[in-house]
Every structure is written in structure tokens, then in C-alpha cells.
Image (cartoon, rainbow, N blue to C red; front, side):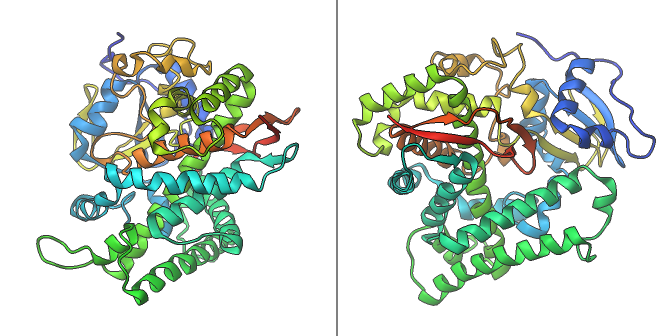
Length: 451
């Protein structure tokens, strides 16, 4: 097994005097990550605007970052660009605030409770597909966003998100994703405060207001009813701190609802969109999946109890997240002098782990660019270094909804793929584009064919 090389001096692209590698990063972020690994190795030093930046590609160094030395780091300045939208929710909060919120939210993602969400997931997926017609052409990513948005609204907040609300959420998410990408790749854009009425700031503020209106309506309706429905929202409204007995402020509830509502559907939608794209490119894998679904389900809706027998469906999703990880890179910032991979870091240094590249490393995966779900059928997961495959991050800040998302993806895949084969429309070019998640652009068009 390859070990991390601990060079005496770090190498990497120099870039411009003031901006460093920002121009190359903005031009082709995924290509930039690939070139740095190809040209400089496991630990690469560069500069991104004012920040000294290290890129980590070896699982041992990534484990140091996310587990061994996790207390030396906070979320990176890049992800902090989402703060106007997500506030102090779980994704962005730090220290005692994060720990308190995590403890309050954790019960909603207990294994038994997640299993209870399964019926809703399968039912909503089946209802969504019921509106499809043999021979019709769909835009896959938009359809997956619609179904996962409805599921997360129902399972976590017992709220119906459909019709005009669903359209507004989708449009607001698009605007905010584009604004995030523009700011991430531009030092100048980051220097302009969000309150300055530039065209992009005005669009983003309007999108956040639309989302706030929806979220506030959900929270206000529940507060007025006083009803405990046993879902996440009820827990957030009623949870008390074990130490001082205080409850979350309205702003804290809003931030957590917004974080879990948006994070809870976009990542799964992206995963499913890429899954169907890969199945469309590999009809032999699609046929094998269809055969498993026919044998296990026999035409009925999938259920949580079916998951152990839907083994190939599970490996299809796992392999899709390897090739197209929704979180294509994770970022941290050092809060004090420390080290990673034997290299010294100073307070304020930024670290990026490009999941996109690590998941495609030939040291860990045979034929790394090939879509081979069967690679996961044996003991590969046990043989891999711990952070050679980490679509949900790792360590204390691992995604709280990872089990929810994995189960949801397999159940939706099963509900759709047992009824339809999605054939990619000829002549289209689909590009993985880094926004908050790795979106397919300009979308994925596919024709429905009944099985």
C-alpha cells in the first residue's frame, strides 16, 4: 500500500503575485486539482488570494486533518460564503455552538428513526414516477431535485413542499449556487460585502428571502399548533439544553431547518442524477440492476426491509458517489500552528482535500475512471485506507445525514429503475460543475422506456 511521502520542502503552482492560483482554480477547479496532484504529489502548496493553501491527496494526511488533529481546524473561508443563507446551522457552526446543536439534532437521525422514514421515501418516489409516461423525455437532475425536496420536507418537517413552493425553492437554490461559485473563484467578489447592492447581491438576497418565507411558514405553523409530531422540527422546537434548560432561539431553529432542508435534498439529488447518467452510459449495468429489482421486488414498491437484498443497487450508488462525489472537495482552516503529513502549518492556512481526485486515485482503485459497481461486492471497503473513499467527510464533522442519504438514494433508485430505463438523449454533453455540490451541467436529458 502506498504511503505518504514526507518531502522536506513542499512544491506547487505559484500563480500570480497577489492572487496566487485563483485564476487557474476559477478557470477549471477540478482540472486544477488533477494537475496539482499529477505534477506535485500528495501534499501541494500554493496560494489562494491572501491564504497559503495546502492540497492533500493522501488518505493518511486526510485522516490527520479530519480526525487526529481536527481540533486544530475550522471550516474553510470558502464554505463560510454560505453563512448569509445557512447562518449558524450545523454545517457552519463551530466549537460549543456546534456541539450543542449536534446533540440536539442527533436523535432525529437515529437508526430506527431513519428506518421509519423509508416508507415515505419509497412512497414519494413511486408517486413522482406515476406522473411519468413511456417515451417522454425528462431532465434528470430537475426531476431528482423535485422528489428529494418533497421527501426531506415530509420526513424531517412533516411539511408538503410542492407546486409553486417547489419551483421557488429550485430557482432560489440555482441562484445561490451560482453566486457561491462566482464568489469562491474570485478574490474581488469576496471583498464586496453582501449588503452592497450589486446585481448578484440583490439576486442572492431575493433568493434567501424566498427560502426564508417558506421556512418561516413551516416553523410558524408548527409553533402555533403546539403539536409534537415526533419529527426533527418538533425536536428542535422542544429540545432543552441539558446544562441550563434553555431552548433554541427562533434564529437557531431557522438556521438548522434551512441547513437540513437544503443539504438534505441537494446532495441526494446530485447523487441520483449522476447515477442515472452512469447507468445510461453502461446499459449492461442498467440491465443487471433491472434484473435484481425484478427478482427482489416483483413490481411492488421497495421497502427498507428490501435493502439487504438490493445489494447491486447499493453498489451502483456507492460507485456513482466515487466517480462523482457530491462534496467534490472539503476545506478547513488552521486556527493555530500545527502540522499535517509532517509539514508545518500556521494559523490561518487553508487546507483542501480534493475528493474528486482521491476517489479516482489508481493506487486505491483498479481502472479508477471506469464505472464498475461490482468492485464493491467483495471486501474492497475493508481493504481501502480509511480516507480513500469519503463522500460524506469524516471525523466529528462527518455529515449527520449520511445514513439518511444513502438509504434514500437506494430506495429512490429502486422505485424508478424497476419501472423505467433512462436512455440518454444522443448528442448531449454533460459537464461536472463545482457549485456547492458537483452539479451536472447543463443538465441530463433522458428518454423513459418502460421495463
